[in-house]
Length: 253
Image (cartoon, rainbow, N blue to C red; front, side, top):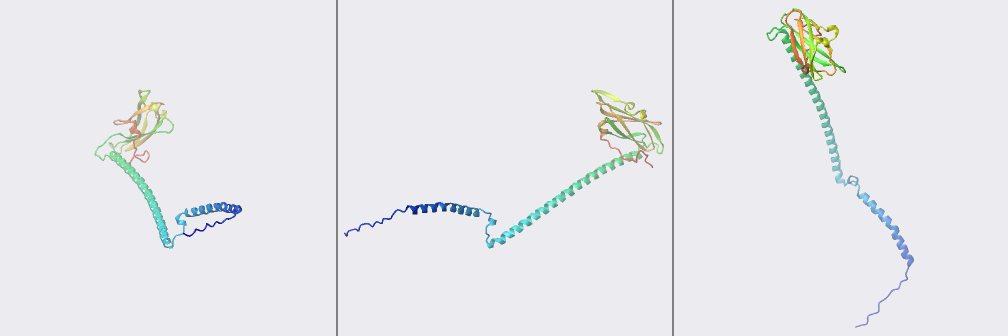
C-alpha cells in the first residue's frame, strides 16, 4: 500500500475587525427586515375589493354592485308603498268610525221622531224622552238636559214645570236632594216648559261636597193633563244621548 500523504493545513490569521463589521451589518439589517415583513402583512390584510382584481372578475363585481343598488331601490319603494297603505288604512278606519257614529245618531233621531209623531200608532201624552247630565269642570256643578215630548193633542200648546230630585249617599246615608235645594232661586219652583210637540230644557245644579249621586227623579207637571215622571240611574244619565234639535223650538208639522 502506498503511503498516504500528510493532510494539508491552512493557517489563517484571526481578523477580529472583520467579525465586528459583520456583526454590525446583521444588527443594522434586522430592523429593516422587520419593517419589510410588517409592510407585507399590512398589504396582505387589505380588503379583497382593494386588492388588484383580475380583469375577468371586474365585470362580475360591477354587475353585483348594480344588482345591489337595484335591490336597495326596490326595498325603498316597497317601504314607501307600505307607509302610504298604512296612512290610507288609518284614514279609512277614521272614516268608518265617523260613519258608524253618524248612523247611530241618525237611528237615535229616527226613533225620537217616530215616537214623537206616533209612528207606532200610539198617542202619548207628556213624556220625559231623554235625560243627560254633564259635569262642569273644576266644580261640583252639573249641567242637565231634558227632552219633553207629547203627541196626544196635536197642535195644542202644553205648559207646565219640571222639577228634579237627586238621590244618593252622603256619609254612607241615603239622602234625597229636592229641586228647591238644587236649583237657583229664580227657578226654585221648577223649570218652565211651553211647546206643541217637543222641547229641550237646560239647567245647572250643584251637589254638596262628598255627595255621591245614584239616581235622578224627574217630575213634569203640566197645567192641564196627566203629569209625567221618570227615574234614571246616574250612570245612564251620564252616558245618555240627546237628539239635536233647533234650539228649544217646537217641531212643526
